Length: 95
Image (tube, rainbow, N blue to C red):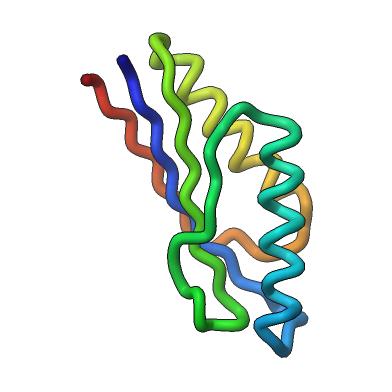
């Protein structure tokens, strides 16, 4: 069993409230869940209105497929242009 986990950090330039941030986070989560078979959630910076910390994970039996899926999710989120991608980290764990 192989687990792929990715953490990403995003910055929202044109935002002035937590309500605006919530709208962007819900949009990202909804679009990613509709397109990819991954688990995704906001996991950091819950009280900051310009920063988003998200965690994405997937599981399978092919390391290449998991790595490819996580990279496609990362590129998809970046191509939405809702927030600037500041940092990302991918870890693949064999169990």
